[in-house]
Length: 273
Image 1 (tube, rainbow, N blue to C red):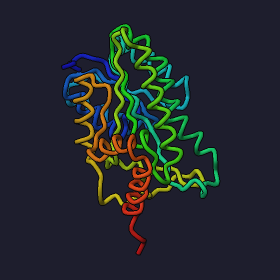
Image 2 (cartoon, rainbow, N blue to C red):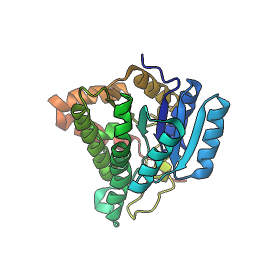
Image 3 (tube, helix red, strand yellow):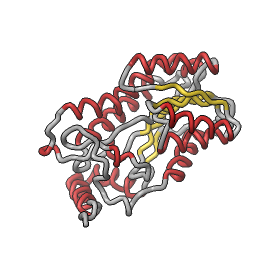
């Protein structure tokens, strides 16, 4: 097991959801934390809770879609703690729209810039420091990074890109001591879908699926990620259904398409009353 005690961990998207939960779990294990997100006020709240748990923590206002922000975040981490042991690429945005309904094509670029290029930028600047400490690069991807899902064309594309990037990077880093972990959660109760972009590129402000069913709680998700970090796993597919679908996709891909279509229809939000 890889102990995170005393290790320096950068977490992007640390102000809410999975990033916040993971920060608190790592704080309880004695990690040094670099918390990055755009919302400074929310970040400060997470930092205070991490410090109350006994951890050392700093915040860095960061928009991962901006390369200079990512570079500054890494520099601040090294200045504060002398190096980097773990980088968790968690920042992300979602979308909810059928492709034929999209009126603002720029939303595809926005989703790709945050979910994919943001991880590329952060990893680029952090990699020399990860190599110096034989560290770990973590990508919080999604099951949509492995199979298509209706209304998620832009999001699934960004997560497929993320999967391909980190799978390739893992091979390049063989023998360097740096490991790469790709995490593929299913639906997690984080509120990210409430902030998803709609067909006009504006936030939907409501979920595009029925949130009353099929969600993993964020505490369970965070605990599974922490376990994978401590084991330095290469990949985690979080749900049993997700694991089965990966096998089915190899032998019956059209069946997987039909399963995804039925699941989308079953989990559509209830009609407004």
